[in-house]
Length: 254
Image 1 (cartoon, one colour):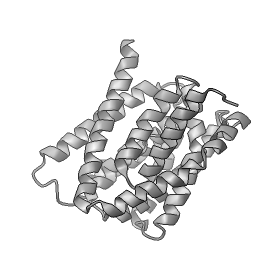
Image 2 (cartoon, helix red, strand yellow; image 1 turned 30 degrees about the vertical axis):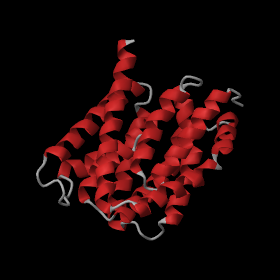
Image 3 (cartoon, helix red, strand yellow; image 1 turned 90 degrees about the vertical axis):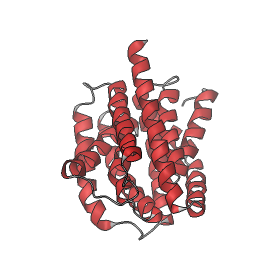
């Protein structure tokens, strides 16, 4: 059992923010993802922190899927979920070769470029279909980064945000996507020895906060205008990307 009180303080805040993100408040989820692994890694190994957060994330996904049931876009899910599974498999096989900091820098740079492109395009308010390469690349990358540092939301936003779906359809589709890939991640995490008694026990202690965060995020989604929903989403994606690059480069420079 992990007894360090500061560990639980950070973990509780992270789970609550993750829950708000799962409920649709994109900024909170992005911040929670960025806060969790670097801060928890002060107390435990990084991949153990990733494993501990898995069960609370699955519980949040279940709450989100129930909250937005039958509002998801099945056509989108049928296409992107198998690609994400492929990304998870690649992450499992390359686990011992690619550092978490490398993943942070790569994803962070992509996020910054993606958002700058949005702000510079004159027709950025119009719905757009992903490019052919992007349609296959972003969902696969989402699975890969979700396996590595629970940061699959950034690549998924690269795929979904330009479509400018109704915000509830967006949240419902993302919620079911996350549920499916997080359930799939149980197998490689178990294979790598992280689904042990200590990690599962710590995960269960954090579960009660999951639905509170989800419903807080869902409440904000219901109150926020559609246009502001997307403005906040792109802004938080940009901040998340900059933070990932900073965290990754700091490790290399230290």
